[in-house]
Length: 226
Image (tube, rainbow, N blue to C red; front, side, top):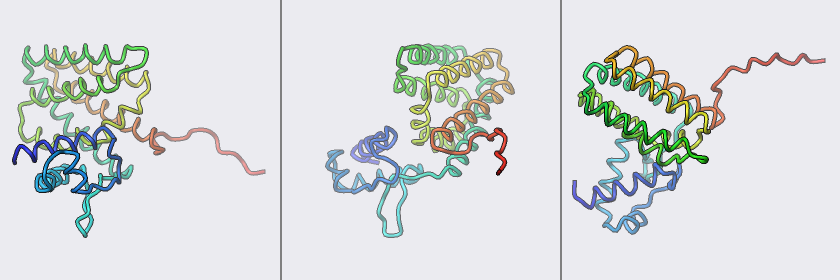
């Protein structure tokens, strides 16, 4: 890929992940070329990469749009991520090095500072959270797992989920990172896998609640008709 294609890919991807290009928004090559400062050929190459990552969708007439996800599709993505990242967490615990653990603790400190503010800095949280999870994949030392997770972790739903978190949900996410660090420090693979699975599942329910999904069973007694 050319440098122009890489630049176009980064710009368009950031626009999608930030929400500036909303789900269902049309992607017109001419407008994107002007915004990215490149010709239309690099734009087409960038769109092909983004389609492979499931960030955009194409119609039969080859018109491109930012991907829209149903709640069922989001549930599938989170379920896959819970399984695969859980395996990565187990492998990471078994192969953890002091150097990577130290980097993860620095990320955890950055997350703590982001969520401890009067108004949580969600963007700072997301940056540190992304690095924290990337370090888990690095410690797992599995190119196959890394390749699979690359199409799941960076989807826009991750960004949108965090931006719907309240202060307590952000703090709870941070506490779960602390539990992961404890599991990694003890090289307890099963513990790390269990925590990671629950961590991802809880994130899904936060997303479902924010988007009107049925994330919980209504246990209120049914009203009797008179």
